[in-house]
Image 1 (cartoon, rainbow, N blue to C red):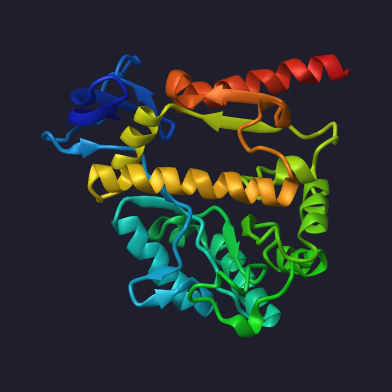
Image 2 (tube, one colour):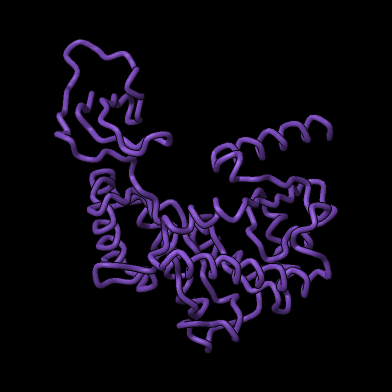
Length: 294
C-alpha cells in the first residue's frame, strides 16, 4: 500500500508532506519500491503517525483497569484505539493481593482474545504495577490500607497470575525490604531501573550497566516545554527543583553525589547525542563490554 499526500513527522523539519509505503504491516519509507497494482490511499494532507503507546494511565471511558473485568478492559482498549493509541500498558491501583491477582489475570485474558476481536481494541503490551509497594508519606490517592513494604514473593505471585505481563513496577526505595526487592528483581532477568538509587544498590554486579544521562539547561527547558503548559520561567523553576530533590535524595540514601561520574559506567549528554543517539551509545557500550568480559 502507498499512502500519498500525508503530513509525516521528520526530526529535522517537523511535519512534511510525503508519500509513505506500507510493507508487511510496517512503514517501509517513501523510497521503498512499489508494486504494480498496489493500493493507493490519498491522505489529503492529514497527519500520518505510527500508533501511539500509552505506558501510564488507569482507565478511561468510564472504566478503570483495576475493575478487573473483561467488559472494562474491552471498553478501555476500544476507546484508546479510537484515539490513535495502538498499544497500552495500564497501571493498577494499590489494592489487596487477591484483587490485584484478578486484575493481572484479566489483563492476560485480554491478550488471548479470539483473533476476530484483536483489532477491536489497543494491544495490551504490559502491566504497570503502581502499588502496593509505595511510600505511606507520598501515597497520593492510593488506599493506605493496602500499602505494604516491597515483597518479592508477592510480586512473583502477581507475575504468575499475569503470565509475565508485569513490565513496570513503582516502588519506594526508602522502605524496608526495598534493597532486597531490587536485587531479587535484577536476578529475574534483564530490566531497566530508573532512579531509585539502583546504581548504588546493584554496584559491583558484573551484569549491571550504570548510566547517567544529562543535558544542558537550554536543552532540558526546550524538551520540557514540549510537554508542559506552564510559562517558561515556571518550567525552568520546576526543572531546578526536581534536580535539587534528586540530588538530595541520592545523597541521603547513598552518601554520594548524584552528579559524580565515578558512580556510573557511562555518562552521556543527550543534548549533544539526541535521544536516539543516546540509546545507540548505550547499546554500543554494552556490546563492547560484553566482548571484554568473555
